[in-house]
Image (tube, rainbow, N blue to C red):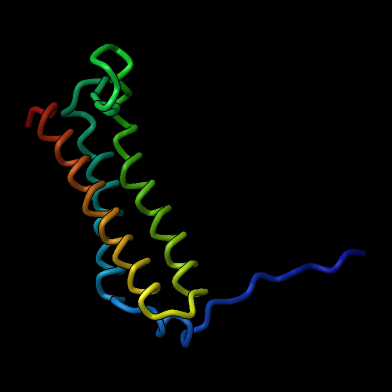
Length: 123
Protein backbone atom coordinates (compact mmCIF):
# COMPACT_ATOMS: atom_id res chain seq x y z
CA UNK A 1 0.00 0.00 0.00
CA UNK A 2 1.32 3.44 -0.90
CA UNK A 3 2.19 5.90 1.81
CA UNK A 4 0.08 8.99 2.11
CA UNK A 5 2.11 12.14 1.92
CA UNK A 6 0.95 14.98 4.07
CA UNK A 7 1.22 18.58 3.08
CA UNK A 8 3.35 20.66 5.40
CA UNK A 9 1.28 22.58 7.90
CA UNK A 10 1.70 26.30 8.06
CA UNK A 11 2.66 26.97 11.62
CA UNK A 12 1.95 30.13 13.51
CA UNK A 13 5.67 30.97 13.56
CA UNK A 14 5.85 30.93 9.76
CA UNK A 15 2.85 33.24 9.44
CA UNK A 16 4.33 35.57 12.06
CA UNK A 17 7.38 36.11 9.85
CA UNK A 18 5.26 37.71 7.13
CA UNK A 19 5.50 41.50 6.98
CA UNK A 20 2.44 43.74 6.65
CA UNK A 21 0.03 41.10 7.98
CA UNK A 22 -2.72 43.70 8.47
CA UNK A 23 -2.48 44.86 4.84
CA UNK A 24 -2.53 41.27 3.68
CA UNK A 25 -5.62 40.47 5.74
CA UNK A 26 -7.34 43.62 4.48
CA UNK A 27 -6.55 42.66 0.88
CA UNK A 28 -8.11 39.24 1.31
CA UNK A 29 -11.20 40.71 2.97
CA UNK A 30 -11.60 43.38 0.26
CA UNK A 31 -11.43 40.73 -2.47
CA UNK A 32 -13.99 38.53 -0.73
CA UNK A 33 -16.32 41.51 -0.25
CA UNK A 34 -15.96 42.48 -3.92
CA UNK A 35 -16.81 38.93 -4.98
CA UNK A 36 -19.89 38.93 -2.73
CA UNK A 37 -21.01 42.36 -3.96
CA UNK A 38 -20.48 41.34 -7.58
CA UNK A 39 -22.69 38.31 -7.12
CA UNK A 40 -25.35 40.16 -5.13
CA UNK A 41 -25.89 43.01 -7.58
CA UNK A 42 -26.25 40.91 -10.72
CA UNK A 43 -30.00 41.56 -10.76
CA UNK A 44 -29.37 45.30 -11.22
CA UNK A 45 -26.92 44.79 -14.06
CA UNK A 46 -27.55 43.92 -17.69
CA UNK A 47 -27.04 40.28 -18.67
CA UNK A 48 -23.84 41.17 -20.57
CA UNK A 49 -21.16 43.50 -19.20
CA UNK A 50 -18.01 44.93 -20.81
CA UNK A 51 -15.56 42.84 -18.82
CA UNK A 52 -12.84 42.55 -21.45
CA UNK A 53 -12.66 46.27 -22.23
CA UNK A 54 -9.06 45.95 -23.40
CA UNK A 55 -10.26 44.17 -26.53
CA UNK A 56 -11.37 46.06 -29.66
CA UNK A 57 -14.88 47.46 -29.49
CA UNK A 58 -17.14 44.59 -30.44
CA UNK A 59 -19.15 41.82 -28.84
CA UNK A 60 -15.85 40.24 -27.80
CA UNK A 61 -15.73 42.71 -24.89
CA UNK A 62 -18.97 41.39 -23.43
CA UNK A 63 -19.26 38.63 -20.85
CA UNK A 64 -22.09 37.35 -18.62
CA UNK A 65 -22.56 39.58 -15.58
CA UNK A 66 -21.68 36.84 -13.07
CA UNK A 67 -18.13 36.77 -14.48
CA UNK A 68 -17.47 40.08 -12.72
CA UNK A 69 -15.89 37.94 -10.00
CA UNK A 70 -12.89 37.23 -12.26
CA UNK A 71 -10.72 40.26 -11.26
CA UNK A 72 -11.11 39.63 -7.54
CA UNK A 73 -10.66 35.88 -7.94
CA UNK A 74 -7.43 36.41 -9.86
CA UNK A 75 -6.31 38.84 -7.20
CA UNK A 76 -6.93 36.18 -4.52
CA UNK A 77 -4.89 33.73 -6.59
CA UNK A 78 -2.04 36.25 -6.82
CA UNK A 79 -2.22 36.79 -3.06
CA UNK A 80 -1.96 33.06 -2.46
CA UNK A 81 1.05 32.68 -4.74
CA UNK A 82 2.75 35.71 -3.19
CA UNK A 83 2.18 34.38 0.33
CA UNK A 84 3.85 31.10 -0.61
CA UNK A 85 6.73 32.99 -2.23
CA UNK A 86 7.07 35.30 0.79
CA UNK A 87 7.16 32.36 3.20
CA UNK A 88 9.93 30.71 1.20
CA UNK A 89 11.93 33.89 0.64
CA UNK A 90 14.96 34.49 2.84
CA UNK A 91 15.39 38.17 2.06
CA UNK A 92 13.18 40.55 4.08
CA UNK A 93 12.96 43.02 1.18
CA UNK A 94 11.62 40.28 -1.10
CA UNK A 95 9.01 39.32 1.50
CA UNK A 96 7.81 42.91 1.69
CA UNK A 97 7.77 43.18 -2.09
CA UNK A 98 5.61 40.07 -2.47
CA UNK A 99 3.10 41.27 0.13
CA UNK A 100 2.89 44.78 -1.31
CA UNK A 101 2.42 43.31 -4.80
CA UNK A 102 -0.58 41.47 -3.37
CA UNK A 103 -1.97 44.73 -2.03
CA UNK A 104 -1.43 46.36 -5.45
CA UNK A 105 -3.24 43.48 -7.18
CA UNK A 106 -6.19 44.00 -4.85
CA UNK A 107 -6.18 47.74 -5.51
CA UNK A 108 -6.24 47.32 -9.29
CA UNK A 109 -8.84 44.53 -9.26
CA UNK A 110 -11.02 46.66 -6.99
CA UNK A 111 -10.78 49.63 -9.32
CA UNK A 112 -11.65 47.42 -12.30
CA UNK A 113 -14.64 45.84 -10.59
CA UNK A 114 -16.04 49.11 -9.23
CA UNK A 115 -15.53 50.86 -12.58
CA UNK A 116 -17.56 48.21 -14.36
CA UNK A 117 -20.25 48.20 -11.67
CA UNK A 118 -20.76 51.96 -11.79
CA UNK A 119 -20.62 51.97 -15.58
CA UNK A 120 -23.39 49.47 -16.25
CA UNK A 121 -25.53 49.06 -13.13
CA UNK A 122 -28.79 50.85 -12.51
CA UNK A 123 -29.66 51.09 -8.85
